[in-house]
Image: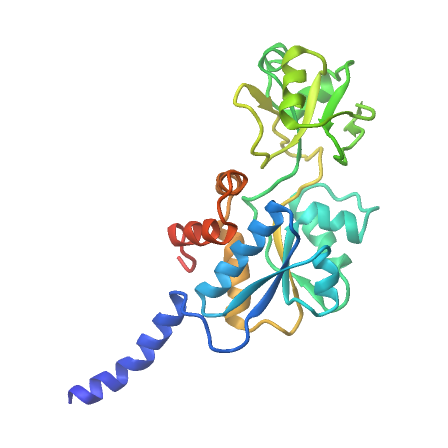
Length: 281
């Protein structure tokens, strides 16, 4: 009698063990990443999700993970919808998160597909101003900048690819600063009227205001997303990459990035976050 009960329970125990992260015995699934700390963290987040549902996963770092994905050297890679769309369809005029995702899905190479995008996790371009400027406008919305287009220069970190306009407001070429602290010091000093940043930038000081881009969007959305090779992921692997998108948010991304910037191991950071935010709920 006891033996029969145990026999009935064994399949349930096996399923539970896999769902709690026991890696499978097959070859590890390759998740592509660049050496950029943000991209490396994202890759580790998705790899942690794959392990959570029983798939052994490893990170493959390369100069161009998208080429590695297209060439079949990795099965999954990660990024942000807007930046990916810029690569695959630079002439697209999509702006809102759903529009950008749909445009990206339609522009991907044959054999590559997009998982669900993270609605609550983004790193889109943003403009920061001083509290004095926001108070003068009576608003912390990006639309206020369009209504009262600044006459002074706009700054950006060196090497940034920033828009030269927001709506009808022509901002021109941004003045570059070698470091983010230098950029925000110039903003505080009034040397520039506004500073380009992103919504997941860990270096934004607490005393500046990042303007909120409300609907309709004035700047292109940039939400977290995973790309994968079609017909290579099984049902549980697809579930893993899609469920990550439903759990991750910008606040958590910023907190994890700050830890990585401070020298923490991206895999450890990702796995700790996943332990605190389990999938499948």
